[in-house]
Length: 490
Image (cartoon, rainbow, N blue to C red; front, side, top):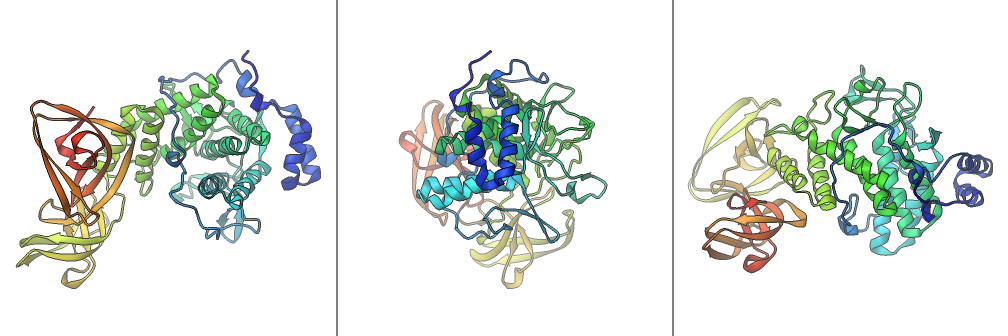
């Protein structure tokens, strides 16, 4: 038996006082009794897994706070624009009624916690704490763990034939709550958050059941699933990709906090599932699938899949995750970018499409000189590639294909960074690198003749004037952009 970590120890008196402000005296006393009967340090004491699963030995490297999942680029506004109650806790509105929603509250809690990191304003810390205490207040204790129920019915993909009946539970809510509790403990060293994290992780150790809460299982191929929409029997579950991956963020944060081998095992098993099922979710040249049960296009969740793969590259430094992020970004343009489109002198063809990508109209347009026109949208048309929906003039409402050198959105867009930087191989011969301003104008260029293939670090990727480029981060080309097609990642 492994020794109990000091951070997991908690007294009955502390629990009662810490929860009292949120739950009220009588509820706090009942909560204290529940703590006394349960085992907050079960994560440290467990010696067997509830089920077997594959687990690749992925690393869990430290990630800078600014690069963690849910990190903010700036301080969020104090005014809450989403549904919330009078205490500043965000809620889910169903019809005219507000419901607690553990995922929304945990995500908002981490946004506030990150705003506290950036501003040192305790307003944000207090609001993060309010979200976390509300999550705890909604808990259902079962199987030596805390579960956070959704108490409203939810139709998957809007299908009335496939409804999650209240109360239902979700590994996404469990995992993101685990991340919030772990980060709150790291920030405040308040023992309540260590206990909440331990009890939440324990929910990953509960076997599936027809009558009791559960969120984790191993499939027939022995791959670990953190189910956003768990169903009984297990095979009725949704196998939702983004929910599984969001839940992993909690395992990562909790492992960084505890260094528990058992938590590491679950983190590794869940990541192994992500990569194993990549071909099942990927749709070449289009949006990935949202889930395996319905094979419905992911919509805006496609870009979330790409971002989540980027998170896992940062956590593991395992290149398959960076490659996966690139493949998702290659397959579908999720970002609805607008701006000035350059048209070269000569003939161009414009189109209108149905929702299924069928051509409903087309026309020729001839430019007597190089021209600029305003695009209201840069979109991907099903099985046809990238198009610009024009926003003014005689072409308003018509779509023109993106073509390198002849019709392209000026500037740098769809950019994302590699953290850490990736290693790329540059082939023998002459490489030309460019320094671009935000408008896509090449302010500088630098040719480099290589007598043999060479390696360099690449820190970012973006579309520049209609073509994918990568930004070099070391050597004589540091800070300059090179056509992605000229390099190979290794």
